[in-house]
Length: 221
Image (cartoon, rainbow, N blue to C red; front, top):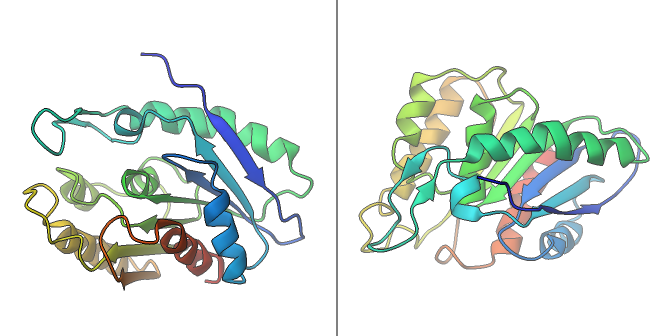
């Protein structure tokens, strides 16, 4: 299956010692997240927003049924998007930056938050990761993380979740807090600096701010 045409938007803060953060976005161009980062006085960094994704297909690590009856299934093609990210998007972006990045991070919200963590088990290309309201309810992911090793331990990992996200009749999603806590414990057991932040509201509350808080945390470790 052919990959969707990606829309790449770069928000440069070119300064010596500045990292680059890659952010798959479900809609928009990442400008809202970048503005919230500026409001939070984040250290200088470059944000690379990646749009045009087939969300359920390209960010799911393996195929499984949709969240609810008759919903679109998850296509399990994250490896294809990761390959595109590593071999096309990152080289193109970083060759065009005025200042080479000091380190590279990956961040994401919801299913992109799951992708940002799953990527740590596939490649050592990312030094830090932020998963805001990540879809860690995804079937089999916690077991996969426990049973496999990462190519290289990241320097820091941020996790967050809305306090109301477990209040759902969906059997697949109601364990998201337990799974997120399990992921936090796994990283801590592997001596990776990690935090878990619980935010007010459900999955759709203040999404840009939640993502920006995660990016700020990994930038300041």
